[in-house]
Amino acid sequence: MTSVETPGFVLICLSLQIGFGLILLAVAIRSLRQWRKHRASIVFLRPQTQFGIWSVLLVACAICLFLGQTLIALLFLFCAQLFPRNQRKKAPSPVGESKSASRD
Image (cartoon, rainbow, N blue to C red):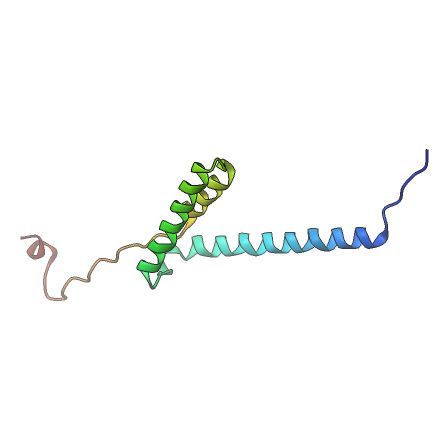
């Protein structure tokens, strides 16, 4: 039985691919940590666009489920769930009024 050696070029390509993947993973984790830390300051400027993208993801999920592609449908659903949500900001109360006067 003869032994087959893996060429050096293949090892270099595999190590570059694994290294690039690890760098992308580290960037994504760092971005997620920053997003969680500064969640209140992040504002999505166009809620209509956000709703449109969310709707497209849900429609793509439904189509994939209809076509029997369950794993891809779950991926679309997962993306829709992780899409940033818009938080409504409360209007500031007038400076001269107290809280009890604004309730009446």
